[in-house]
Image (cartoon, rainbow, N blue to C red):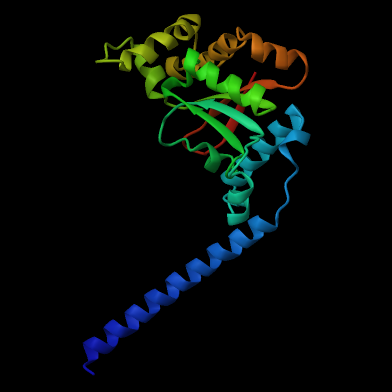
Length: 233
């Protein structure tokens, strides 16, 4: 065997060992995830559901994810029925994958994603479905740092096609904080979360769940630089 063939064979073998080690590590993590027995969604109070999200986000920020509810067993558990412990209305931004930033798994979060995290009628209907019919005890409206939709609304940009629709939906929030000290976009991101929550409170179905203590509605802001989710009051 020539020397270059020997070296090539050695590199191939080493690469194969790396893949095997990587696969083994993933299998170990999946096995641990399968062994976890989280409390049933139906037993979680709104406060406990919020705490579960916060703890998951902290694991994500600390780079210590547990990858819960991502096993083959979990896949089968939720194949016929779902009971997400949280519903999140958030931006469609590709940098904001909800299950990852909260370190959750299959069937844990009912995602409603739309540019600018705006509460359209369709979005509200989806949320009502998750809360009333699926029993989700927590609803979070989550905006994020440097949101393009909010930035466009602040700059009052003229955008083509239906892109302008979500800009119009954010403008009332921009108006509320216009002229305030600080970064205009950042102020509008927070104001938009609060404004969309107010729109959600017009839903009789959601309001009924809140009054009965079965639902908690909170705001959140995701930091693109750190991965941290801060609660907005």
